[in-house]
Image (cartoon, rainbow, N blue to C red):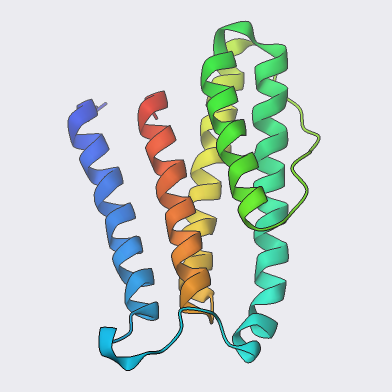
Length: 158
């Protein structure tokens, strides 16, 4: 079985996130001299409200899993709490409730694998949400959130 070195894996991960951020940033870029506001327009806000609700639910699910893992597995507390703190920050940014229920597998190895899979899934969904967002400002927020999750995953050794 081929195994990538941590540096190569991290480079691949960060390259993918960089591409997503570049794509999302391109959606919301404006000429500096245009005088246009970075605030989303009313139609964009209305079109994006369902997307925000869906993303809030997905972040809440990840928060629940990270919190449950931190409570249940002493050896994973540092990693799980870092993810949970990140998710609370993201939910706060979206003006959403920061409490969630979740569960974690009984053995530590399975719990770590489940946590990292959940975080990878959330990262992919945040990238997709950044592309889907009608508002450039919201796309940038989702892209930044995806980058934050990617960074935590890299620190966790995913």
